[in-house]
Length: 143
Image 1: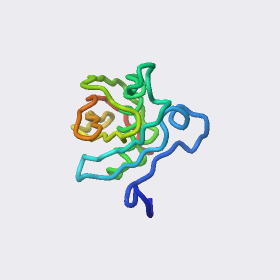
Image 2: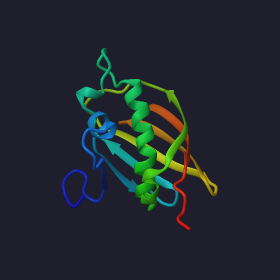
Image 3: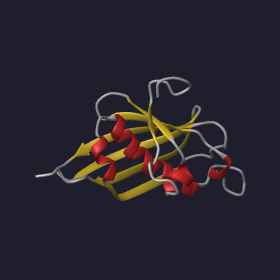
Image 4: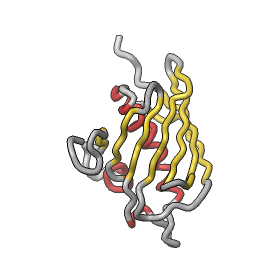
């Protein structure tokens, strides 16, 4: 983004309107934090809440899954936008509120010929809201 709150960040939105990312998650902003690391930010909105007014667990899982790919793009791996999640685990560590942005700290732990092993922690302010690990099947390299 050239200016505003997210100046210097990579904006990530789904180019196809009406998809889950477009309607349920919303745009995110990412930046590289060095080799194999990235930060992904997401502004929370009322549609992310559960009936008690806290951030919904399914939304947090969706954001974690999204953060892996937005993080990879920020790490200089945009070709992996079409990779697929093989597995994803979540640990819910606290309650999140609608309004303050979420911060996902994404790390690429290991990479093989076909897979990437990743982890993220999701924070709001100084509080840990959730943690996740995932295995991602890479997009095959054209021959």
